[in-house]
Image 1 (spheres, rainbow, N blue to C red):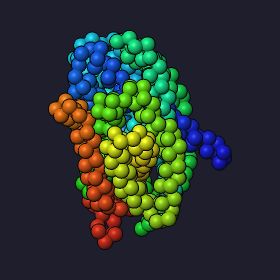
Image 2: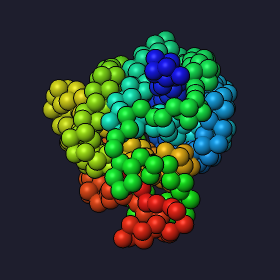
Image 3: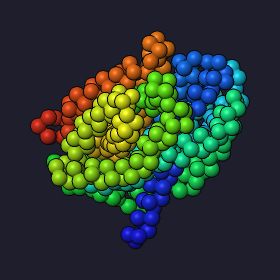
Image 4: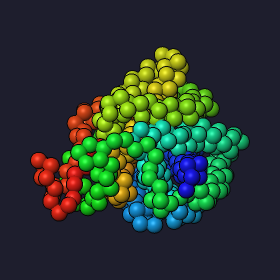
Amino acid sequence: MNENKAKQLGWSVVAASWLAVFCLFGYRATFAILKGPMSADLGWSQAQVTLGYSLMMVFYAITAFFSGMILDKWGTKPVYAIASVFGALGFYTTSLINSHLAYLFTFGLIAGIATGMLWVTSTVSIRKWYVGKSYATMWGIAFAGAPMAQFILSYITKAALQGGAPDAWRGAMQILAVIMLVALIAAVLLAKKSPEAYNLTPFGEMPGTGGGPANTEYDWTMKDAFSNYAIWAAILTFLTSMMGEFLIWTQVVSYWVADLGWTRNKAVGVYAIIGLIGIFSMPIMGVVADKVVQIVGKEAKGRKIMLIIGPLTGVIACILLLMAGQSISWAYGACFVFAVYWAIVPGGVVGYTGAVYGRKTLGKIWGLATLIVMGIGPFTGSYIGGLLKDISGSYTYSIYFALGSFVLSILLAISLPLAATPHDVKLDGHHHHGRRAFSS
């Protein structure tokens, strides 16, 4: 296959991932806007509404594990196809509910299955095609679908609610259902198998250490992979960041409205700035991350450095949010910094895991890691955010909680090792059974 054709296939993978990420974050971005009108129309507390989102993240996590295994075995197309059906149904069936139990089923279970099919598939498919000095750049381009969803869908949702009808949120969800279906069908058409299926090697490979690039293709068992501290350090670093991140995403609009007295239109407008800036910060920070990898000469080390910087920006953003009562400028500053955080951590932790464990079995490894992270972090963060508001009457304590989560994530990132060793490999480098450790 000629180089131009190979590049076209790679870009097709990036485009499919962009659409998948757009739909995944479309659920998250619009919830922060829809939960207020839903609460008012249905007479539910903030904790009751947020519980549906928290449950969605639990089923998201469970589904992510299975989608990782499907991805390793059958590729991305079947995963995106399933997601297209459930993604449309999640919004549409929720638009019809009147009881809390039905809401937990439609938005919790159905939407959870849809979103769980998208994260692992989009991140791992990019990692299978792009490694070393090109992974973060290409993932940054694909991940720009997330802020684009936040920017575009925030305004579409806002426009659908403009009439002021108590149940206008139902029509907004039906519009979103159509968008999910169309976008994910397009993702199915664009998706490609791993590069090996086309007799290609991934783009961006760097010289290996202690045995070369062949180390990246070590066939990890789940027991071997999860017997190493590397994966647990990555999981805990990501989990604590997710607790803070999801608390902010689900509560920040309500914080500006309830605590600072802004109008909902003003709050949504500022919130959309995160998406607008993220459209540019995603690819830019991807290039920066790859430059760091090239400078240090070791991918795992470069990804680790970025995972220390990422939650540090989360800390700074939380501090700026706490100062937003003094001036709206601080809120704009917080949005800018959160956009930078967003561009570093979610993709960076996948890059680190791929650098340590390679590509061959990354789907199932990252699928189980996502099950753990997303089953705990987003549920805990978003639910505690709503609960602290119900208890204290203010969202301020929720922001302090998020700040503490980011600080803990920094400390865990500092502990990330640069290699993982299977049990049947001696520490002195002599291999048993022809199997070798991987160290990017």
